[in-house]
Image (cartoon, rainbow, N blue to C red; front, side):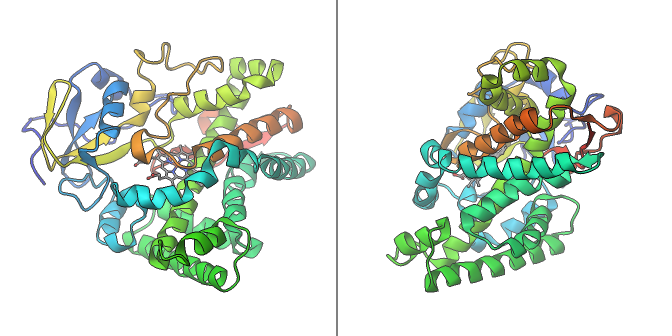
Length: 406
Ligand code: HEM
């Protein structure tokens, strides 16, 4: 790739978190006050620009001169797996496309994920939450809230969206976990992706033969059968919903529950006034920023970003966690304040690729907090905070387990 800037000491990225696992690496705060973009070195030795300030991140994500296509020259390869995905552009989903292709495909799904459409699922999500928490409350503590609640809930919600039979849930959870985790070899990831695509292809074909009332059936009837969408495009679309919506929401849910259990100011305020829950969910999305290593783009033209010239063919990484702790946008950024208006946070990205499932994720996260306040009000950590195992190696930051007692 093109050399970014010849500098003698280029820091490695991602950096390690400091003493508190709930805060992003401290170097990011220092970088925010420097130039608009700083060169950093990725795992494979390549250099890219790192952007850390809120306004600069929004500027890049809102600028069509930066591409999301991973095969573009200079595109940052954040992991070994991203290199592998780059080698298979034919099965890319629209998160890795630019407009007009991206918007053609995204628009087919857009109305299913509008706030009004998502509100219709709220009662069903609430029932799922209640069933899970009632079962947890009836069991003998300690219980791991990651395994019993934060992981299965988002996967069941997506399974319900795509109308996937109950007996396939374990298969889905396992394969999508491999796709989002860094602990697997590129070969294992490739195999999991092929497995998942094989299953999803069968699912699409079964809906072609016998459409139901689920999202896949609607896409088959409205888009495939009218010639606007091919089966080859629909399969990665289903995979994207599954992968983008599962690990992210699970990780965020686990960290939200941890905050509820350990942040007294937060739990007292929410208990006193549960109407603060929706605002608290946005604030927790900002605070935890689980897409911990940020988003990748490459410049397709020379772009002046503040004081930095980014040349065509150079890669850029946008640190969402740094942007969400930018004190010029969010005063006292390292504190969780459920009364703060955090709605313009960057946790769902910004611009044309801004998270399609954000309203669904928020309903799930809200219902999980309401459920905890009502059905497991006495829950507390079953181990000291220092013994919790945080998942530093995965792209969505989270917890390996959250043991609670009551
Ligand atoms: C895109 C975060 C939940 C579906 C994104 C992006 C981010 C993000 C940062 C932008 C990626 C980019 O610009 O390169 C999150 C977080 C979630 C969450 C933090 C939960 C807390 C969901 C859910 C779904 C979903 C529940 C759907 C079931 C998508 C899709 C895209 C996307 C389809 C691609 C949008 C596009 O390219 O136009 N998400 N997401 N996400 N997300 Fe989410």
